[in-house]
Length: 327
Image (cartoon, one colour):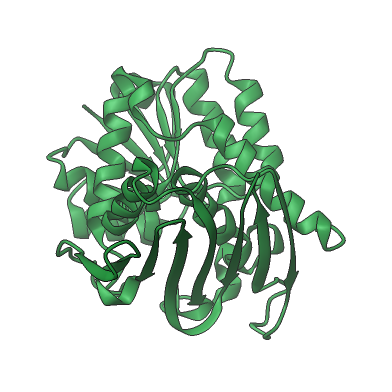
């Protein structure tokens, strides 16, 4: 298979590595910046192009769109026009995703990212919750915190899409986290919360979201921020007969079985992080996600996320923002 990776920043480079890890080397890279074209040619020895045209589209089998979120629609439409399946990085703009859906009259396979569903600890936690052996979830609390300047220390925030309000770092992470939460715990009936700028990064963006998810018979509380000087993902899930505690920096999670009055430790498989990234951000979950996209090209039902689900997730984000006066 031949792939076209559009956008060769941090995520585009990662997707090139994913493809190569899976044994695919027929890769074209496209970016509007010459320095990024030069980088991937040097680092990964792939072909790069400065122009997207029909001759190129005839050669490739699939798109991987790794541009900033506000550029997704433009390139998704090109994929749809050329009837090429496309993987798209995490979205954050509801109207853009709705536009992709309405434009896709050809019903081309579109695979929105859902990276954390492939994290080994989240997969195990999901399995425990869904098997029902410990009863239903009664409540949960989750904190996802990072420090925005640590994301791309090699460039200024103002040169990076996370400094734009609609694609701001904290705003983007809310649906990124919701994508696994709705799969692991379920779809909420309602959501309310607050979002605020609490620190000055030199950009007009909110950096903290705090919200509650309401289900039929239980609730969950979530905090997402990009002000945490130490990166955290901390989860507590209470079930009728158990409790799950997970800190992603501990490379394990613990399950308390009330019936046996004991703790069971689930160890995380060893994984590797790319140079310059947080050690807890393993490449393996990204590789598995790309593999699932490739599987979905022939059997779309194998891919665990959809445009429809992406829309529902971004509608939850809008509910949170509207409950605090609107975005």
